[in-house]
Length: 404
Ligand SMILES: Cc1cc2nc3c(=O)[nH]c(=O)nc-3n(C[C@H](O)[C@H](O)[C@H](O)COP(=O)(O)OP(=O)(O)OC[C@H]3O[C@@H](n4cnc5c(N)ncnc54)[C@H](O)[C@@H]3O)c2cc1C
Image (cartoon, rainbow, N blue to C red; front, side, top):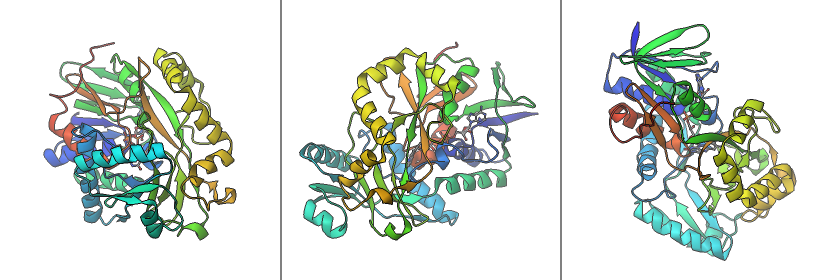
């Protein structure tokens, strides 16, 4: 049979897209292929679980708009499906004069993005968060927490209930596009569909190249390493506590995150990974390293960011340095408070000129749409991303790269 739609990738972006397609076109035939034995096993199941409000993103940008809409849509989806979430709010804490300056710029940006935000001085911060110190802070009231693995798996249930097929343990190894359709194959099976949407996260560039696309970027894995505080410290903060981010880097800095399970995590850092899907520390996958080592943009990125790379590497290797980052705003934390917690791995798209691609990147041909970059806050923004793909994926607004 020829399906109306085939989706590769059972992370939150692929699942939200499947849901939106069946919403727009009830009764359409849809198959979603996921290589793991369960949904949401990579970025979607290894993140901070924050429903971002959208303070960081350039006003008017797609990222700002999708985040704002995504936060509302995620909360509504959770309400509709009785998924636990909490709007606990967050503080972005400045601990130096430079951070205070950056914090003030962030305040203006958040206001332009129409986000409910307040600016506090150090005393006001300490009244609300007795264990946190800083020269000042931004208070973002609408930030929330949720378990995105639960959200994604519920999206899978919705797709199934609308007649969509979910096939796990199906690793796509070939993609062939013709004038009328696209055929996608694993070692054992093939599926043909009129449209293919590829949401492959950490493997998105490989899947695009498999489909014959010529890309100008490469996915480089960045590990995000976390610790968990002992249960006795679960009450250490009432809100989420973030540092002021360096505007040149796409990562938000090590934060204290209250989790929906009641625990508190510390992290993530952002350290170069040697395996796209190897979560234990020191995991190495030769083909993953070879893929970026052979890409000129990777070495330019290293040249541009070697200083922060060294700091991140040091903090990753020595817990004491990692702790120093957290103690800048939470001085009561001790080394024994940092208990092991699973890491996440970000799919960071790097351009040929060595720049880190911050924005969502969609690449299409006549019958395929590849989501080539879906960085944070793509978990928050997944529902409107899926709607956008469903509405207009095969027409306007994305870049057509030609064939490789
Ligand atoms: C450490 C970390 C913290 C983050 N924190 C947040 C946060 O707090 N809030 C937020 O909004 N965002 C956050 N993000 C970002 C967010 O998690 C991701 O942007 C989002 O999950 C991306 O979803 P995805 O579906 O594109 O990718 P993924 O979840 O990685 O899914 C891609 C799927 O494609 C499958 N796949 C790949 N290749 C194949 C193949 N050949 N055949 C079949 N299937 C294949 C994979 O197995 C995988 O399941 C964070 C990310 C990380 C890593």
